[in-house]
Length: 457
Image (cartoon, rainbow, N blue to C red; front, side, top):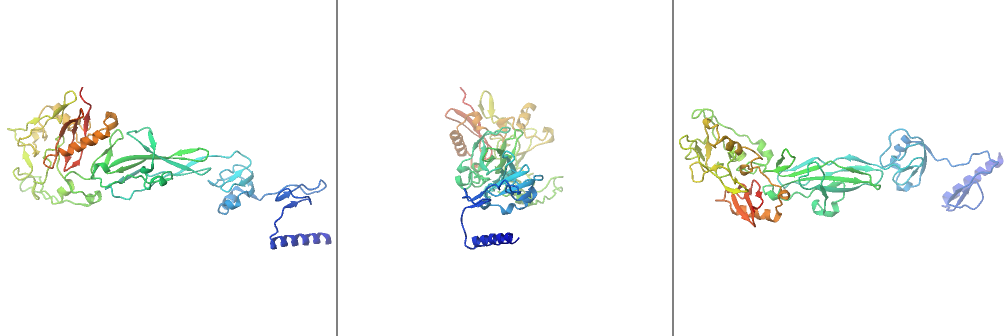
């Protein structure tokens, strides 16, 4: 008993002195031989009744998860024996612990000794599905794609090109596609560089689609949803293609949608003069803009400047309107033939007639239509996105028709020069053998795109 007490005292003094004087030396445990490493543990003699081995701290998976905040790169090489691996793992911490046994801390994750390392990639957050910029002066908003996995994730953003609706035909984004340039390119946050100025200028509008691919070190990857970004107002057609238009009506004041929604109009019943008619309100034109008759290419008929406030547009001499005459009905003329036989535009009010440039107040006998002619011709005037010559919503696909972008820009410049009297015109020209018709341009603003046909051989 005395000998054992002496050994305990000597061991305690050795440990105390080592701590006090910062003893740094190799140690052999279990023998007096020279140590072969910093810590050399050798087996006990064969006559010993003590089991050999080193027992690592025993912990359950739940206990290990509870101490996740304590493990950093400073604890690299730590070893623990998992006695119960049931329960949930923590991504990026204990997700490799899949069974009972020794686990080793790599400095970033616990690695199991009883199973092959598990590699994976998961999505934790999707980018915003649709972002809308109305005026072109907003602060751009970042798209954020969250992903995690068995190792550090890398990110690559792509933009979808063309009118690819059902397939991702895309190209990698470059520095000019992101706010801040190349330094902000391959991150999980991506701020599209799409804000270029007022959306009153068609060149600053657009519709963009992006997605992101995240990969870990072993190339396990996940792909985000498609994030759509619209600059300027517009809508998708039945083919899923985006068609841009202005955020306010033609002729209306340039007001935001919020202002438009909050603007009230008081229409005063003018039943004493004409039953069920209303006087024009002071804010009506500011909000609603001009009055267009579908199928008529702008000839001034939509201009409401001549309609006085508190007038219901019933006086042809002072208001920009004309009453339908059953004895002298409107006459019509066609534009130039483009292609094989179709004229652009088709069946428009004849220039020089009393109806030209006026809003035609129609009658029930003519089905309240400004056009009188065959039913087939009347139907064509109303075929939105089917009958191109008179459709103000028509749009084009440059790649499909093979029109170089340089020529397209030239056509737009030519069209601007053709604006008649500062208002509008239909411009028919041939440029380098290409035939085209520029749709309506009002007050130097393009409100419909160029309709292009290939050269006639």
